[in-house]
Amino acid sequence: MARYSRELVVPVAVDDAFAYLSRFSSAREWDPSVRAASMLTPEPVGLGSAFLLDVAFLGRQVSLRYDITEFDRPTMVTLTAENASVRSVDTITVRAHGPRTTLVRYDADLALLGAARLAAPLFALAFRRLGDRAADGLRTTLSARAHGDPIRIGERCPAW
Image 1 (cartoon, rainbow, N blue to C red):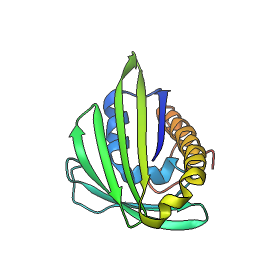
Image 2: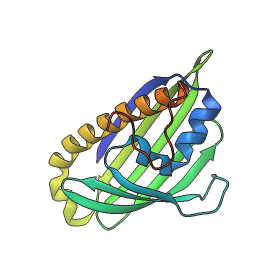
Image 3: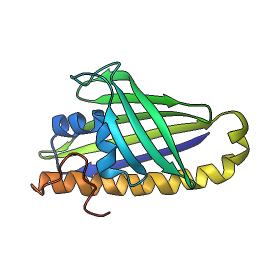
């Protein structure tokens, strides 16, 4: 199993950070490994909402359906995805950090399944690099949004 955890302080209100992050199709804007993302279920975002992400990892593109399996607005959302090779459980928590800042904690657990388990050591190292780039992109994107820089849905983080 590969684990990744990161805390970020971002200059946005808790409600705004939660709304943005719980709509997991926003990952296309801040995670450089996400090539495409869409919401599969109707509004509003909540328990049972589903998202399809096409992710590039170790030279391959993989489609993952993420389902919201825990939802406690505006503090915590857990998303789970599984295919024949991997099971991913991502938990995002947010809490006020200051008058206009939010502490975002992103925890991800990835378990390789089947024959893919043989690549576990390489996978863990690559997963950490991927997670760091995504966390940096998230910080940059939320900071840009807080300063009124236009980032429209489907656009990439200014750092990419």
